[in-house]
Image (cartoon, rainbow, N blue to C red; front, side, top):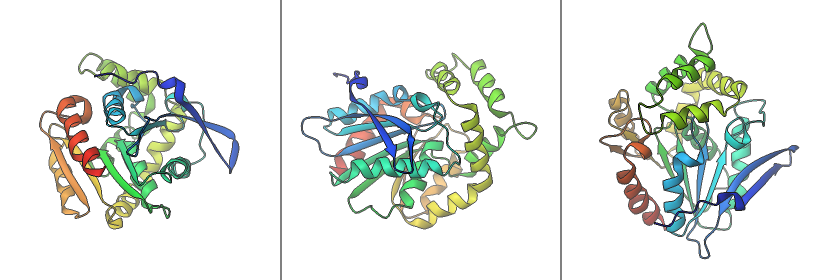
Length: 273
């Protein structure tokens, strides 16, 4: 397989009309003939490298690929947001900019970013083209709320510093533990704290918005994740297709890389082209 690894040549900048001082960097790769566009969004612990296999797969399947780090994370680490909900406006602007030229738009989001992606798309009034959403254990179950309670700032939880230190102690225990730690340290602690607080304060409001929206999306999870029964119960919502992966934990697309990549290609991309 030929990998598309020179992403830096496609660096682009998003500037919002509401705040022209901030420049949000993202990357776009376009094949000669494109079936559509696949958006990859990254946040806490994620980066383009943890999704490199999927990004390359989408490109080789003749999809344009766009990947973007949320403010406070990765390449956009030094960009500050006033409120958690600012993520929705920024992501919405990015989607609007690149979704209008194709009838086939695909989205991939993991964990907290999966939650942000769903909340952004739920509130869009411009979704007239074809939108297909693949989430990887998005933060919408009671298990996820427990996690965000755990990483609240002391004395309630372990906080950003405790979370980073805990992640450091797990280096070597999985194929992505070192990269996860590196990604955490390449984050703004202030943005991290802001995101964690907002999700704890508004979790049930966000969950209700997503479940009541009837917006269709795919929910994938690992059967070795904490409390997989909570995740499997998501299927009671008729708009959500649930797919589990036997040998995977929270990082489903890495733990079950080949199986997940096959599903991504055959059941997600090719079914939507």
